[in-house]
Amino acid sequence: MKNFTYHNPTKIEFGKGKEKAVGGYIAADGVKKVLLTYGSERIKKDGLFDTVKASLEANGIEYIELGGIISNPVLSKVYEGIDAAKAHNVEAILSVGGGSVLDSSKAIAAGALYAGDVWDFFIGKSMITKALPVFDIITLAATGSEMNTYAVVTNEATKQKFSIASEHVYPRVSIINPDLQKSVSKEYLVYSASDVIAHSIEGYFTASYHPDIIASYIETNIATVIKTTEILLSDPENYNARAEFAWAATQALNGTTYLGVEGASYPNHMIEHSLSALYNVAHGAGLSVIMPAWMKWYVSRNEKQFERFAKNIFGKATANEGIEALEAWFDKIKTPTRLSQFVIKASEIDSIVENAYENAKAFGLAEMYTKEVLKDILNLAV
Image (cartoon, rainbow, N blue to C red; front, side):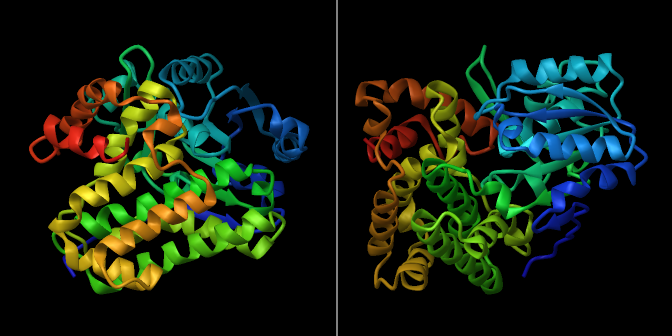
């Protein structure tokens, strides 16, 4: 293994009823006022909002509401949150929702203590040096944002979907109650499965050096996602399957799957961000289209690892059979595998390529992922 330093300061509170204690977790940090962020009004209809409100009030914590955060979160909403945080002098952000709400909250937390434009952080114009504390109750297992330094936001004006990464936006406490995720639709369950698998395979296939122990860990995580997804599609009330799926999502992107790894990159996310930015497709759905296409293009560059994937995940003999098996599984669970399923035509690929190439430059991958290469990959997804 290569040298590494691993430090993850996020405290995870996992299990049934943990959300009832959220006020106590926040009060322990001396916080008296929070910006409470969420997505749809669903958390008010299902009682979660009242639970959170009661816990905050019991601990003497005031809250300012910011609802309406959408999937594929947008910069304009982040600006709204920053304005609210500054106007009301909040001391922390409490995110109640999925990864989109939490990513927005991280950006708000950083922007609230910055005199300039928060987009500066996304384009590398400025570095995050401080942020408000972030707490969260995660209601959708997918992004792993509950235990990492990342946040992704789309700038509607420029059609750029960019990310930030800073130790200052690690959540202080993340609450994961699998029961709160039972209402997730089958559609978003399978999109989430795709997202978790994408997080798992990026380094697994692209790293110039990949320790066996980490590869084995990733394979177990992927196998868990496949198994639990199939269980949950037929039995949404299965708590143990829901719990294992949720923890697999967290583990896929909390740093543990990259320990001792060297030379890893994120080409699938790099390309998919263009689909989300241009067409507002669900991130996981976009990934299930891009992954098989990218794998078909990339396989010859790391065939031994693809053969390992085929054997250990699907019991197949060859690299190409493994790719075919993953694509077939995506088809089986009914997450998209073709651009045409988004009503995206071959004639639109050039515009996607232009956007994706800007992402490639931001990801430091433009030398390998030229416009010609990006077009070849996307043509495999038509």
